[in-house]
Image (cartoon, rainbow, N blue to C red; front, side, top):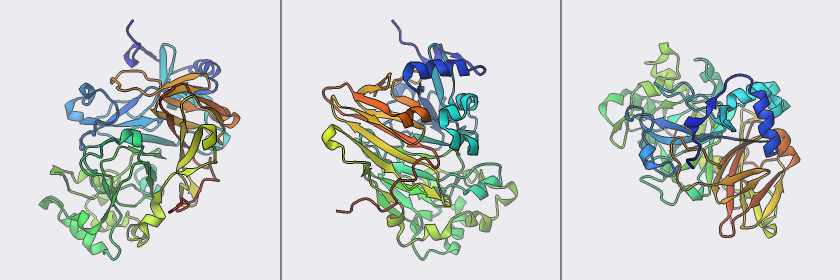
Length: 422
């Protein structure tokens, strides 16, 4: 019997509340999500998303290869020529599907909790895997205030490099971040002036850090960074604003339009304004690594019970407000545990199989573009607070999941630098 695929489902836009109630009752407060694939025209896929290689260009060669998978997303992708729902996650209930965005609008606090709903009226964060063969151009994301100039939201973000998706490092597992201390704005301006002369030399002013699977970074708005070629789990604010500062990457042109796409139109040739969008002090910070690097920290000493829950993205504070955090839960074969959290979250399985309340979990070996999977879940706040039962049904390998949380959910999260250096 042929497995049901995304194409077989009926898309519903109205009256989703009843289906949501049905799904939550059956699952124990959880929603099953379908894979959400996103292409990027200016990058080369790294082939570690488990997407069937025949589907890497499922959106069409002109749209570029699929190098991202977005998790529990209610954020529209900012790609040119995008499909109407590009970037939006779908909830699967029986033979029907509807966007998580519509689900949140329908049930509000019933899904994401009173605090987040009353302040934002939406699920304001998302996470993704981005996976590239080589580096991304040196770029930054606008702050809340600067993004508002073009009717957008700012974008702080974070990185974690899951070992299960990084059996190979691909072409350049290093990330340039910030600018060398002592760099001047005049030097950066010269790079912009040289945009059409080939490589504009912006990386000459920066410093690369070797990327290590099982570690991560916090990247605030206005901070230049050129992510390297590890497959990266990226909890972030629900926005897709950016500005590229590098004109040539691995021989590929980066058009000026990708530098200024989220800036006021009358500022597109104003080099001083463009440079002013950078957080200069953060970029030239002489203690950059100490202020941005993350290593996992165990939530509690539970190893003897067959599982361990670890903070992988913590602190998460920007402009005095915690915007996102993330944890990695690992269960040894046969282990079972109840995990309580402060708020709703999006979850992805990176290894193994098991159960989460009354939903089956399974990490697929390969995923077709239209395939439905059992590896992605949205957990409601009420289920998270009550406690979710995880069970590893395998006898041979761990069950590993990543879950990310919204703003203000984990005030007890460690601060940057809290991991042991021993």
